[in-house]
Image 1 (cartoon, rainbow, N blue to C red):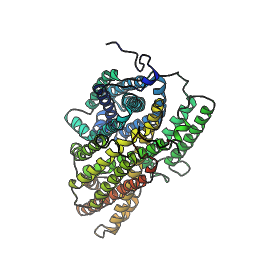
Image 2: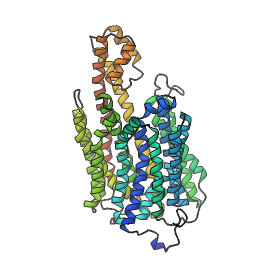
Image 3: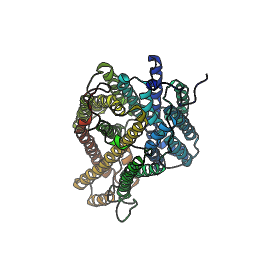
Image 4: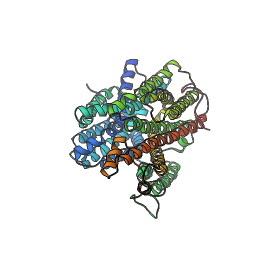
Length: 554
């Protein structure tokens, strides 16, 4: 079937550039964009439960595979702003299609990878680049294909698809890896990407305007700044935040994490300063100052950061409780997360449909309160002897809360600017969500290990049934950090180290208590972040997008 060139439609009158399509076509477009969002979010959650299998298959270590995961996040996060600008220059649909092709090539390369190097090229490199083109374009294509009054529901559906991928990823990854091979997850992604490319032909997009030269200096500064910041955050649990952990690298006696985060912030300051100069000279900046002064946009972006911090922290801790403490398999752990997925879908799709005139500010506040209550219930019930039943209600409440936020924030952000600036907003939005997720994982993970180490050392030191010599050795050997181990893993390690059955039993019991204390401490960070997020909701509008007469800038 003949079509116009990708990303370019026949000339239309200016008033027709905000496209109007039939309900059936709109549903098809939303399904395509939701499938793309699902695909982007699926990778990390699928890979996390397959790390051991991948490492064994490729003849590498678990650390090697974790490096690939880190690099995937790094590439994706650092290129988001640039990807959004390229979408504005090339055309949203064209950027989406090119990104999908690159992503599919990366998935195929990953599935065929004979070693870690090829895995990193395919997954961390090609898929990361593809995602950086796709995700900002998704935001812009919703704005270009859905009527303003329906965008809140549309963005809720897109966000729900991404969050559900994180929730069901362990089920898919565990089932496919166990039944066939982890490689078939990536082969399946190629098939899904092919389907997305076929359906993408139905998307409509305004033709790109004049093609300004891309700001190369701004691109370099943004990539270097975001890359340094995100990499520092992701390595903090291994290197330490300020003081380097035993065996970790250091610079002038300080952990590289601090230097990388500081360098990233300085480079981002330099990036914003440079962008202001480009705009003053009449050039085309990657990020406009007006966007950063837009109170509604910055309010939505800030809450996006909090949402993904909360999501990352929750998905980091609760699966640890289910898989390590209770000993569930990856597939069983994924099943226990279904209440969150179901509730999230109900809230993200249902709130805009049932309450189309609801206040975004009020819905977001209710969503944060639901997350706070859910995490609070889980923390209160997190005691030795607790079973998987304690996660059902908290996960359901958290799912409703995340769904409530998802149903509002995307529409708030895009409605705060002209449609022509939607790709830029898409780049900013996905940059903030990656930063929020990275910070959530890094901070919650650091608190978890620090609390586990302190609790276990204290428990061993105070346990008189453990010989004094063992207690003294434990204080020294464990000071650098205690891994979050299951009872079986710890028993095996102690037996191999020559510990007696009596000492092994006592240390295993102390480790059990320490794990619960560590989980409570790390979830308390999530709880505090949720409460803190409430203070930033004042920047959100009180009326839904399209009907709010409030000024956009404050």
